[in-house]
Amino acid sequence: MEERVFEEELKKKSAAVEQVIRRFLPEDDGGYAKKIREAMCYSMEAGGKRIRPLLMYESYHLFGGESAIVEPFMAAIEMIHTHSLIHDDLPAIDNDDLRRGKPTVHIVYGEAAALLAGDALLNYAYETALQSFLYIYGREDFQEIGERIAEALRTMSNKTGIRGMLAGQSVDVENEKSGHLSIDRDMLDYIYEYKTSKLIEAPLQIGAILAGADKSDQLCMDDLGKRIGLAFQIQDDILDVTGDERELGKPVRSDERNEKTTYVTLLGIEGARQKVETLTEQAAGLLETIPGDTEFLIHLVKKLAARTK
Image 1: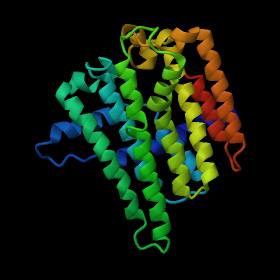
Image 2: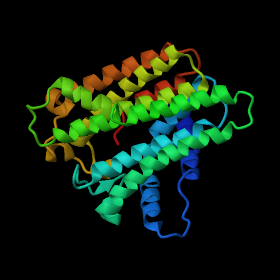
Image 3: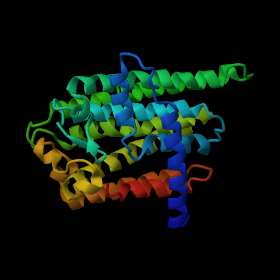
Image 4: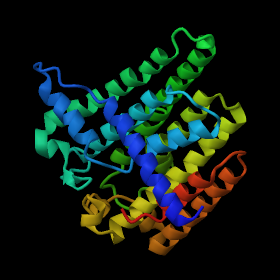
């Protein structure tokens, strides 16, 4: 696939993903809880790469999925991701005042409202994902597809809760400002795998589950997500040192300010770059083993590794 063709496809697919997400946002009912809905939508509409719902969409269609049951899950995974960003930005954690080029939620709405908006998005994500059942009522294969939806919900819960993303975040927060010598490579890999990779594994595996892929393909997508997620987070480490705040849309040098151990502090910039390259090659190699058209996904994985924002 030529780079020009890939970029055109990416633009088209990203626009379709954006439409899906906005369709599932909570509507203003004019009631007393207007502020929390505003804060939820402010954070969801602030932009972002929408990588996770895009990966879910690609995985679903790679394994033959054709219906709209994937769409509520696409919106849900982005809600969970955004909830984590709102809470990460709070003064109690990273204390950042810029996200995606805009003031963070707690700067605009206050700390209490930001905390509640994050909680609300996490809860609303599951309310949204459950709407998938509405797409299959009356179908002859209701039981079969319903079991896939239930398994997808289980996977989403597992990957984002105390066995997944939140576990990684908790260890990350516990070890902030503790000095670079207190976190070794094994602990750092745990933080990255759980805090970041689990939320990349989830959409890839959920897409495969909803499409009816066999267990070996589901596990392959899970492994793929782990490698993409690690590469993504290490590239974040690099950009925190080398990036431009205007291009990134968030503060740089925040890891240094918060005394965080990263791959850059352990391996240096060049060592971290080499790790990103190795993980990206491994991810592309995994995709090449899967029957079907994986060309777009391979290009996407490489683009994520080379991103500058």
